[in-house]
Image (tube, rainbow, N blue to C red; front, side, top):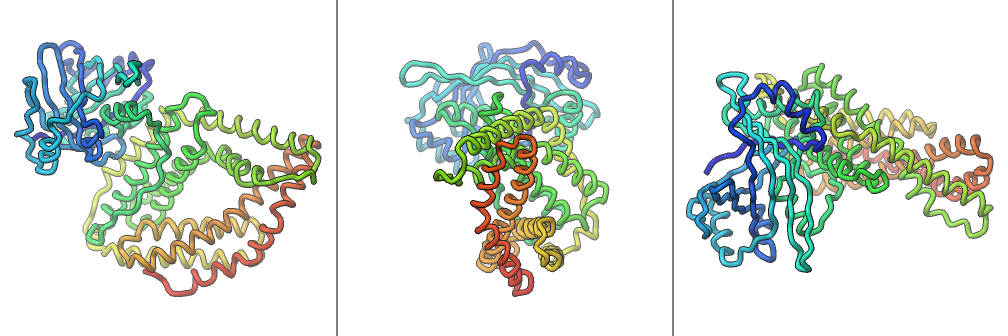
Length: 509
């Protein structure tokens, strides 16, 4: 068994000439001529290998035929490490060399049911990059496609265009730093989806779905820096998956609102995480990435706000003849036009070069964080308690300041509760599950109430601006706000009472 450590980067086909001309690529040692690789992936008709995250393929390169088995590994920022078994293929599968018992049993059990599922065919150019004697990295440029034939005889395909960096000697950070350097000049996006996974998506005719935040997997035995890194990589996976999912759609109308929403959630969670661990992190890291992530999230804020306005405030309203139909129609048209324009701006801002550069730069800095004697000595559970106490105290101060019920004060309180929620979600595995779950549910309920109040306040400002620009909208704008006014008033009166027991009562940590 060999351990494959690689970093996969997607790029548009039009960027291939620029990639080949880049000094770091052009200066790397060329390993022979480009070759065409034909691969066939096998599984059972019910995809038993995929279910266990095992990939089996045969590869033809000229006259050479190889059998390869790979097991999945967690990938972050495109960087993955997975076990791989490769050997000559004689026409019959041989799994005797698989020394991972679970994978070996799975393959042996289903040997007779294995059938071809899909194929990949791509042209590979390979170079060796060795900036120092102790570092050797293979740069492999792959361009081709995944194809399969459906039961009705038709064919489906998806393009392959990527740069794979495979570590021969050195450390994983060497891969990330090379990728980050290339991304300064090229539109490179870290890609955690393997060719096998793309083939299965094509086979199942599945489109990528928006990815929500992963549950925390902290362990009380971790030091503070390793705990931060674990949580940050989790946020990176959410960021990368939703950016890639949105980038897969060239038409702004095809980008689902959920991709944009979850991308922004990943940025908010990362910023909350950095602030949470700030006492253990370099001040320059905290300041730089808080700014970078805030600016990145702001690229998509208007699109998300208009999605919420349309879906949660406008569509639930049923005029029932109580407002002029022409005014309501004009409001609906104005909303759809603004929503489309915001989606186009978001699509423009969501360019591969910017997201890839940010992702790789952040990933590189995560790898560079070091553990000193002080952070090694800090007990993670104690650190978590102190930080959660600080978040709760801050929320308590914000609640006191919000007694005037001014929208700006309630918005600040909402942010305070959101940070408390994220902090407890991050540290949840360190404390008793049931009390944490009950407390979190209550925090989420309060956050939802404050979120609705903020949505209505934002809508009021938006509608006022629209009505100034187009007086026809005034009756419909007034009706919409009046429709939500009773609920708004009721929640506004009681929200501070709902906050109180969470900020002064018993803590689950």
